[in-house]
Amino acid sequence: MKKTNTRALVQLSLLAAIVLVMAYTPLGYLRTMGLEISFLMIPVTLGAILLGPAAGAFLGGLFGLTSFGTCFGSSMFGAALLGINPVFTFLVCVPTRILAGWLAGVLFRALARPARGGQPALWAFGAAALAGPMLNTLLFTGTLAALFYHTDYIQNLAATLGAANPLTFAVLFVGAQGLVEALVGCALTTVIGRAVYRFLHR
Image (cartoon, rainbow, N blue to C red; front, side, top):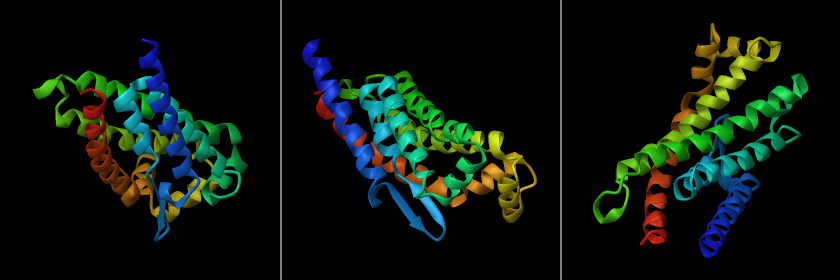
């Protein structure tokens, strides 16, 4: 039991280090054509699949804290939200990522029925891998709309996007960014997650 706990802690520490490296280097974000596409849900979802919902929640919280940290300088959008309401900005950045990581782990646990060779089926990995970035996007934009839609800053942004209500704003705000995050995250997490899972459970 002690050996198993130590191995899980080492694996969690490694994934946490990956989150931090990605958060503070160009590896974690693709910035192009006005879009800021994040790939930090990949290690978060991997942790949820390999180590369980609690690990997914921890790694999601770490991702959320790094995201909140960008509001103090490197993200103009985040800095604007911080200037409006720091508490609401924290709620948009951190609890949403904790919940996304936890739910991805819960989903994988629910679907991970042993198939051939005693390993979960490929679709179980794919479902959890897709759920991670999608939940991140849905929870982030949903909380953003719920807490900030009434503010002048978001109202001006909504008018620019042509959004008439919070739901339309959330859909238009996500746009291609959410699609790219979901597709890339699903593909990479499925492949890496299944391979590592096999190695750890052989």
